Length: 457
Image (cartoon, rainbow, N blue to C red; front, side, top):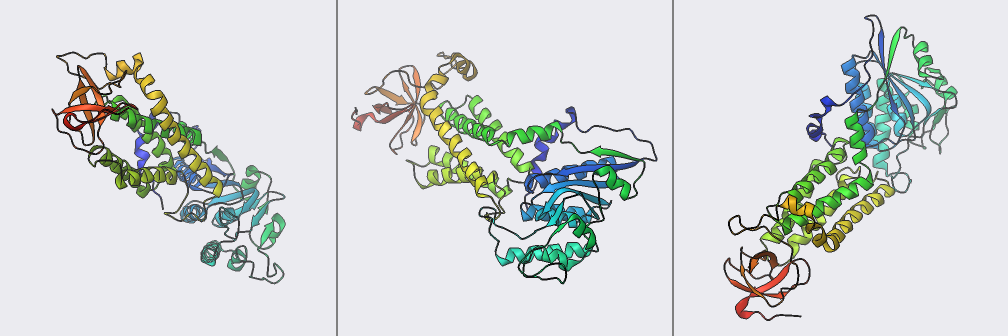
């Protein structure tokens, strides 16, 4: 399962932000804590439940009530929530306000008591493929049957009925025939022990459960959680990818400046942290991302030309950025909806192409602005203070200069009093050797040793 270790990155600022509404209560008041599950069950839902239960423990709540309306979702995340419900020490009630299908049924059965609104339903827990909607292979069905059965047994409900909510081949006398999975209406659920009573509100639920003189607290996400949700927006993710790529590029063009690489690092943290905290970004996916960056850096600064290391690095970076956005289980995408894959791919491509366009069409224009010159300290060049790297202005074709750094194959050359970015076709050129510019297309100059180079148009 995916962990939430990076929470420390944001927890340091949470103390200055408003958290939950505080309620005063007398010593004899019962504390009732309400959380909502009203969307698809996924990693975000699991994280939401974690936060809610932590808040409930802080408030020392006597009862937990889940306000539920869901058609289901990812089995692994539903199983996580089920386990928390079974292990929670205080009574947990669920109010099925409309639907508790599939994963929602599993979570409901894990609660101590089930209450349903008029017209509500529970069941239909067959495992389906997230992309096609077709029934999953038997290994998934078998696992779902097992945890439905054991969960029902744990709370004193008929395990055969729970299993028949998954498997259409199970027939139960007077309840269901072979060829259909069980889905109970409110009255049927009451009849067969899968609902305590029909209620129209949480207040009515508490009255039927015999809870009196209570203080009701509804869980609300904090400002930090809302900020995290903002950065999970695919549009924002695409913009952050653009900043990551653009920052790396401008730092390579002007090494030592610091501002571009700082912007890239901040964008990377803002990109990874929300997905990590919501259980989407696994440790191995983040490790793959940094490995890809390392391979690209190795290709640029150490290995001549552009080959296997560079291509592998690009694939790892793009692939890991995409995987971070998906609710996959390692490399198992069975429960990932195809629309989520498409959205993640579109976000990555938009960020990459936006970064490329920024490099080729905005590079010179951006670095020539007063703001960038002020940040990069490009206006402080002198013979005593040294030089900072500049983008080339004008043509240098055929001009000779000197290697200011080692070119392997990229580096810096000095032509007159200008320090410029340059690269070779794979040759190593030592510092101090004479070079000649053989091509000045793009933002960097292509050079060769002066003794064996011929200018090219």
